[in-house]
Image: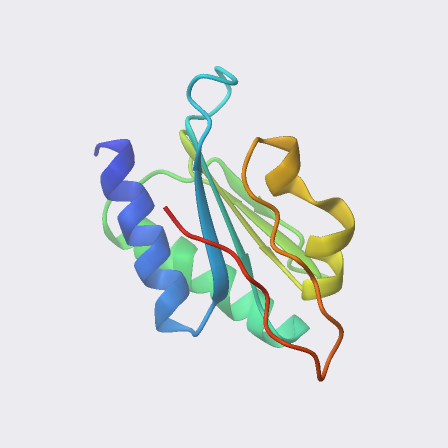
Length: 124
């Protein structure tokens, strides 16, 4: 399966469970480890786990072999490794703290505490 197909499946799976601020970054020119990075936010530990689980289930159903998943225990940051595509699902404060979009050259969404205006991020 092509990378863009995996990206589309992952984003659809995140959208199905109401993932927020989904950012998709092409990292193919930055590293040989993977070619695409997807970052999404969940409102609670339960939603973060559900988002990551939905991605894993949908990718497996489409025949994508997963390298692994990590972080289900706490649900603050769950990573789904699909080889060429790596998906990070995080709570808002965790996402803001680690700022992985900036590390990989993407536009960092600005975090605003509860009651503020929503994040401002552009998905590719």
